[in-house]
Length: 102
Image (cartoon, rainbow, N blue to C red; front, top):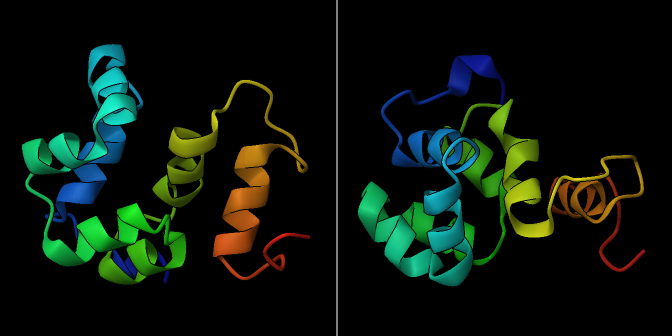
């Protein structure tokens, strides 16, 4: 799950890139993730990974490693990033670094 595994054509990469930069698209994602995934043309495997917040699964599908922590911020916010933030904990849990619920 490194840079060599990135699929530059994977719609999730474009979705993360745009959601982080476009407040209107991000609001739509927050209010209707299914519609956002449809807008970006995500595959069924990508959609399932997003629904389950499966960050490792997204990495295996070809999401850029830089974007993987950004996925957790899309769900948990990124205002006060630190090792114990909700976003950091979600990332660690989903990547198997931290046991869920710890």
